[in-house]
Amino acid sequence: MTDAPAARHKRSGLFAPIGLFLIALVLWSVWWFVLAGQVRDRLDLQVEAMRAGGWDVAYTGLNTTGWPFRVRLGAENVSITAPSGHALSAPDLAAEANAWNPDKWVLVAGDGLVLTRADKGKVAVRGQFIRASVHGLTQRWPNVAVELARPEFTSHEGAEVFPIARADRIEFYLRPHLAPAGTPGVDDSVDVLFRMIEAEGRPDGPVEGLAREGRLTAQIETVVEDASQLQGPDAAGVFAAWTRAGGRFTAVKGEVSAGESRATLSSAVLSAGADGRLEGEVALQAVRPLAALAGLAGSRTGVVNRAGAAGAVAAGALEGSDRNAVPVSIQFRDGRTWFGPFPVAPAPRLF
Image 1 (cartoon, helix red, strand yellow):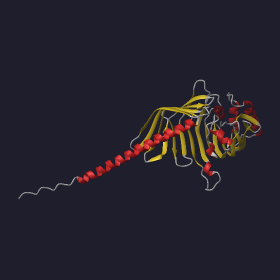
Image 2 (cartoon, one colour; image 1 turned 90 degrees about the horizontal axis):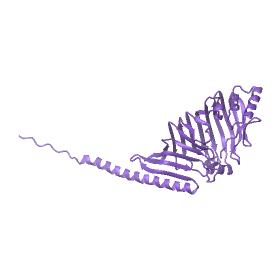
Image 3 (cartoon, helix red, strand yellow; image 1 turned 120 degrees about the horizontal axis):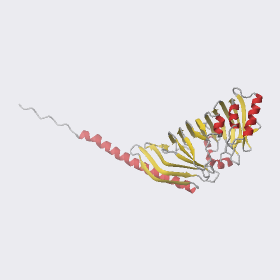
Image 4 (cartoon, one colour; image 1 turned 180 degrees about the horizontal axis):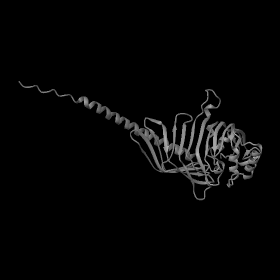
């Protein structure tokens, strides 16, 4: 008696998953190429809009890669110059997003940046990494984060010396203003946070003097009102249009440490004058403020009013104000920074 031949297994069931996978791969690839094309088209439209607004935008070697899970735009010799003369350039710049979530983008400058400050020249910026992220592009105000790890700043020949030589970290964050619904102006306001950690100043510069050869760490946060006015193609820059429209910094607060000196600061309102310099009053609770002022008085830079800083130190010493957590008031007016009756430096300039 012979054995019956074994029944053959049907193999059609093996091909079905493979077929479904191939169909999904084709559909996904079509989606990826459509998305990549849309990204390129929107970039072209944005560049043309910037050029029409007086900006100079140039780049070479633009390419799109990242299939299948990412969309990556890469370009070389990128240069963006604002009508004000401020510019940013990078030998290599890349932006990428997940193909399934093109609402969040990360930009990386792998070979550093060069910043051009109008009338002050160029400064090269290199570091462990320089990157920015943007998400919430469908919101009126997206969430923006800029991070520089261990940046070093080198002024080009003939440029004004940059006050910071290096830092452990520099961060900047922007988001839509968080406030209860119905608060007036909330839709046109943004929250801003700036951090600079363990910054080292240039020799004989104001930062080195302020920190007494130590390190400067600062964290400042504020609400920027009338943020929609931060635009404009004129040579003065975006803050000029914002100032003319009545833009203000409100709810300003922060912490600063410079060498042995420490301070917490707050201000209800700060704005800019017609000359672009900051105006308003900042209240501080300071620990050893005279040490920082003495450092400024000894600074050999032309920016600091050494006589004014020395006068403020002498007055503070006579009053015994170099104790723990003493109240200090700093005013920005008439284009100067005032410590009591003494002008110690120009007021910070926005434009």
